[in-house]
Image: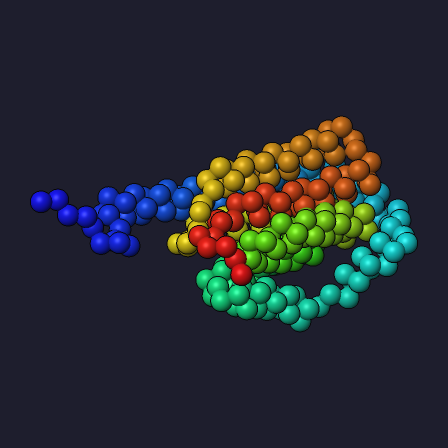
Length: 284
C-alpha cells in the first residue's frame, strides 16, 4: 500500500537538486569575481603601465587640478566633509552595517554585509599601497604615488553594498538609491577635485563588485538570481570600457569625465543590490 511522506520531509532528489543549484550559483558568483579581476588587471595595465595611458590620464588630472574648487554651493560644502574622514569614521560605518543585520535577527546577513564593507576598503588599500605602483613612464610628469583604486570611492561603495546586503527587503531599494547617489557623487568629486584619476574610480567599482561576488558565492539562504550576477559581471566592466573610450579617445571634458566615472560607481551599487539573493521569508 502506498504511503505518503510525513509533512515537512524533504525528498532526497529535491535535496540533491537544491545542493546542485547552490553549487551552480557559487561557481557563477566566483567566476564573475575572477572575470572582473582580469578586467581590473587590464584596466591597471592600460592606464598605468603604458605611456599612452599615463599621458592621457595625467593630462586630464592636471586639468582637474587647475580647475579644482569648481564644486560650490550646498553640494560643495557637503562634499568638502569627505576631507575630514578618518579611519574611525569608516569603522563606525562598518559597525553600523553589521548592527543593521543583527537588529533584525539575521547574523548571517550581518556578517556578509560587514564583510562586503570591510573587505572592499581593505582590498583597495592593499592594492593601492602595497601591490600596485605607478612607474614614471612618460618622463613628463615626474614620479607620482600610486592612486589606483580610490579609497574614498571604495569606502562609499562598500558601505552602500554592505548595507544593502544586511538590510531587510523593504529597505533595500531605498538604500540602493541613496547609496548609488552617494557613490556617484563621491566618484565624480574625487576626479573633479584632482584627488584621483578616472581609472582610480573605475577600479574601485571593480574591486567592490569583485568582493560582493565573492561574498555572494558563499553558502547562504535565499532565492538566488544568476541573471543578476551575470549582469553585474558584464555591465560594470562594459561601463568601465565605455567611460575610458569616451574620456581618452573622444576627449570628454573634465566635468563630463568625472560624472561618467561617478556614474559607474552608482551603477555598481544598483546592479550589486539586485544581485543580492531574496530572503526566503520577508525581511523584518
